[in-house]
Image (cartoon, rainbow, N blue to C red):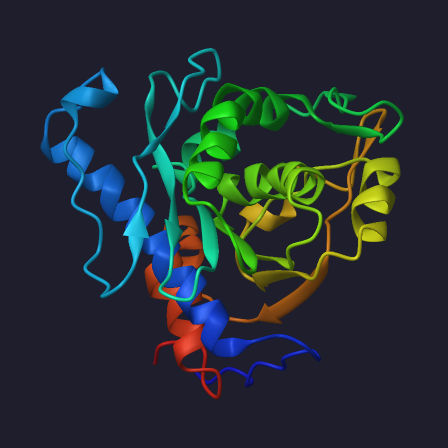
Length: 266
């Protein structure tokens, strides 16, 4: 079965998108290292070996601290900040261990964005999760002393977190170029917040496998709530054998970006 070639919109940087996906894949490897070390509960008890990239600097793992969401029941490393040799800084978030777990448990309530009045409403659970690691993430960016472009990249649940982080980065480093690449992001926001976000004109490219269920949640209309995606979708079609396979960063999304003329494995 063949698949159509990817179409990339103007300003989409394919090599940069591949790099962002590879960095997010390193965040998943970070999590696997934590599992291999028997899930140490204290950050200073976990030894992370970042990827070997000449000239790059990697900060300490960013930890999730929230334990009242059904799909995450303990603190765990969830990403990192890195600086490349040119001074460009990347904020990186992975997704959850099991897409199926949080698809089953996903709540759909909304609440007002809390750090600036009047911006609109966002998914309550995603906001609480971001709030639990927000200070760590922003401090990690500051520690790298950004002097060039800022990049935010994430997969799955991380895509919701990275979208919220964009507002903080734009406010704290308003003079630095900022771009956002996400993969398989769920819907985050009500129309009012989506309008504000898109009005910031931060280039935001949301790579989506049409066969992946995660970007389809929460539904656009869920009871009394409405949800919208953010940014510009970059879509491809790759239908594999399971929810996990369609959603996989390495085997679905990264493969598609590295093989844009035939984005589905034969």
